[in-house]
Amino acid sequence: MKTIAFQFKNSQEIQLDGRLVLPIGEQPNAYAIFAHCFTCNKNLNAVRNITESLLSHKIAVLQFDFTGLGKSDGNFEDTNFSSNVDDLVAAGEALEAAYAAPALLIGHSLGGAAAIMAAAKMNSILGVATIGAPAEPHHVKHHFQNQLETIENDGKAEVFIGGRPFMIRRQFLKDIQKNKVAKVLKDFRKAILILHSPQDNIVSVENAAHIYKNAHHPKSFISLDKADHLLSNKADSLYAGHLIGAWAARYLPERTPKAPLSTKQAVVARTGGDAFITEILAGKHFLLADEPEGVGGNNAGPTTYDLLNASLGACTSMTLQMYAKRKNWPLEEVRVHLSHSRKYDEDCTHCADDESKIDHIDIELELEGDLNETQIKELVRIAGRCPVHKTLTSQTKIVVTLQG
Image (tube, rainbow, N blue to C red; front, side, top):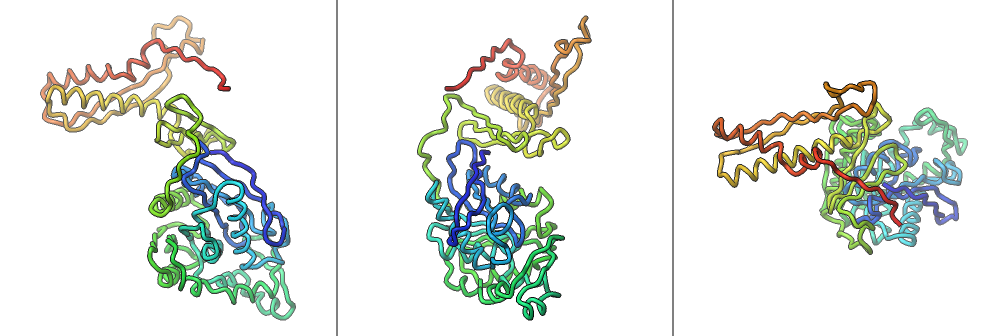
């Protein structure tokens, strides 16, 4: 992925801080904007993980901090739900001016309610996805229920949300009370995806039911079973992102890239600033490679040696199937099990040198079908003659040059 700093000003001329995350090739099929949860910011792990999943669907994502939060300017106590909606509209205008108009809004928690309200004001938006969203903005009052009387009487009060202090003013309460998502949904005709966990103890799943009931088709609901409100389990947020990407494909028209990816080769790999996550474009196919968490990676994809084994395994399996078809043998299925290791050559006389280590790839075959012993022996022999096997065991010359 490629991350670009993206600052813009809202309708009040306050500068907001964001970043645009682009997929490999920097030619996305669509642009999305992410609206984070109440008092959160763009650095929430769930935001990053959902973005990571959307990149594999060729969707670029603008993450930004609402006014007074994260690295954005302004004072949080002067903001409200309406200002969040206005910030989303301003983000869409800035994105359209710099790149292309957004087609998708994604909102988490209160950001989901804001995404619905903003989408109604943005002609370019074709779909909205909400995650753990309240049916109405006034739901957030539960965060400071004990301070409501003080806020009403004194005009403001300091409340603690997630262990952090925030100043809430009376105008905030009035604003969340007057904004009605249900009213907007009466005339809302854009595609909407509602994701919610039945175990959400911050915003109950009944809120999703209310949104779904008030929305018009095309509308979809997906249960994020066993997930918590913040999607703190990485697997849950990655799953949510992939669901959104797959759903969005039905509504987001594929963009024609202005220019093909700048490479003369069949495969291009790119590693950016996010640890070791590497995007791979093989022809028209998108893959991710990474390292395990134990060595500093995020385990977002197979390791490079996993991919090497996968290539050899796929080639071996295909070769056996082709050979069996030509021979008209009853080979129904091939399963190839591979493992890679580096071992000292038993005949080595300089075992103290790293160069003396030999790479070993162990292959075990499972062959399904009514095969006789002669056919099985022949297939085992042919397994060692697939093209990738020959490449790995031959003297391969690799030339590295600098593009330019």
